[in-house]
Image (cartoon, rainbow, N blue to C red):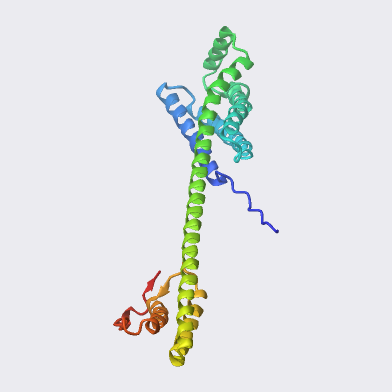
Length: 276
């Protein structure tokens, strides 16, 4: 049996992932910039430029984290959560190092226009005895929780997609079961009707009512030709349904000539209306 493998469908597409990553980092940059402006830090332009560099690097590193998490999309939720918490560690450390580089190593003399202020900042750092690793570790902790917040959003979006897929699958199965039930009922009704008709034909032949027998056979053939060639789940026009019932009732009229009288009164404008 030949099976066609469906193409892999990620739970969260590239576009959605990129928009959430950019949204998180832009929001973070805006908050930090507002804080810097409220506290009236000097050299706002220089700080903003370096902050943009850190933001771009953060977007790139978080995108790499997304590619890692995407590989575990179809794994159990516990595996995905553990992967997010573990993969966020090197991502946060890398972002912290980029932050340290741009704000401590990259052209430190021009960080503030006032050289006296530059010297004061260096002295404060020396007095606090903060090493580069300590500074990176401190920033890495805060960035770790920031990255985990984005990863949580990613996992939530993926879980919501899985729920929607499960609902659609359940709906398809329910519809298939309903269709199978309708077909089963049809196949149960048709043999019962056929047996009764054949019995009536047998009686007509025995009593030599050849014309009635011939009319019943023609109606029976037309009825089954129309009925079995169509899907019972498809819609038909009112004209087609009425024609099918004419054949059926024509058979019953031969079986019950004194008890069944037929009269059709259907406006022509309704002929093309669809019905089950």
